[in-house]
Image 1 (cartoon, rainbow, N blue to C red):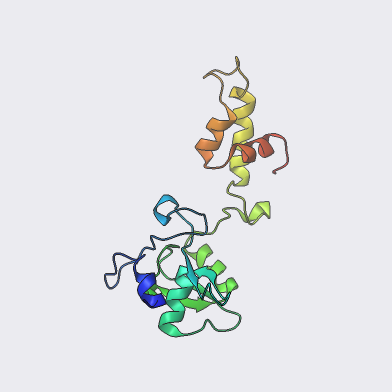
Image 2 (cartoon, rainbow, N blue to C red; image 1 turned 30 degrees about the horizontal axis):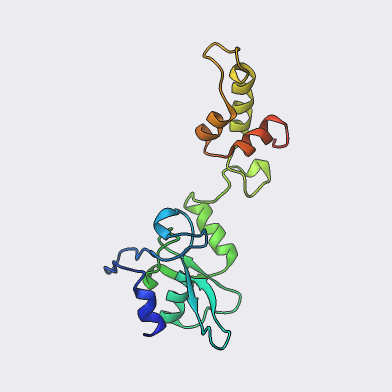
Length: 173
């Protein structure tokens, strides 16, 4: 069986014009269906001669269809779906064009340039709001509407409890 035939076993639906969703292993571990926002991984090369390695499933699809990724380029998605391996949805671009594309489509990881942190999920306004909620409702036995836990704040703002703790300790501005 060729690498392409083996690859297609992990792409059960391949309708033209649609995203071909990878169902094999992912960069996050486990099955692709268990993880949103991670990229598919595919093993290429031989175990026998020691050339076996894992690459992005979307990269494999691109290379199969268009040839090697040009120097200085990465494989990007037109469709904004990390698990998509449809070659028609892939293109070679630079990291800078990929980031600009993500920002233009509102899918960049950071939401607020004012923080200066490219990985933040919280805006300056949300940080202030979290601190205000915690000051008013965050301690057991206080607050008009009862106490609010750090876990509840994390759930409400879509971040981890560690991120909330960093906000409350002043490590995030």
